[in-house]
Length: 165
Image 1 (cartoon, rainbow, N blue to C red):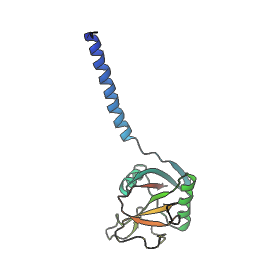
Image 2: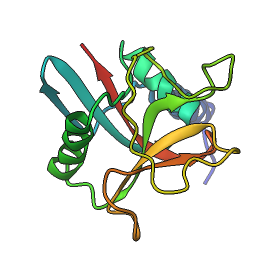
Image 3: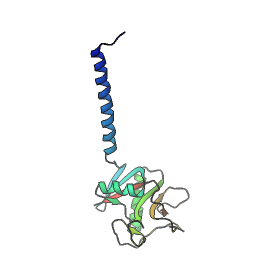
């Protein structure tokens, strides 16, 4: 059976429309903001948990886009608060970026992304090593005690928590 010129033109129009819509939707999904898995407010701070695995830099960018920063832990109570948040969110286990690194420091000293001045640290024995430049909190991860920190390469892909006022 032969197609008429009108049928051919209609096929071209339909195919072109489908391709254009597919192209547009690929841009829309690439630009959609990250959505946290779980959010709660405690003591005047908002905490947003993201389970998409990101490098330290990419996680920091997501937080900044939402006018937040990677979570800072100033005392043992806040460390416990973060563990409780992970439990309430139903996280089975893993590593979570903290906003603590040597990346932001010109002296390569460990510093919080929000410049918090605290002496609290909860490193696992032997952590961090000299090669480590970013901190992560361990949660139901192997034989690690919950809430202890590990040093890591900032390129590792982890879950993360953003914090803001």
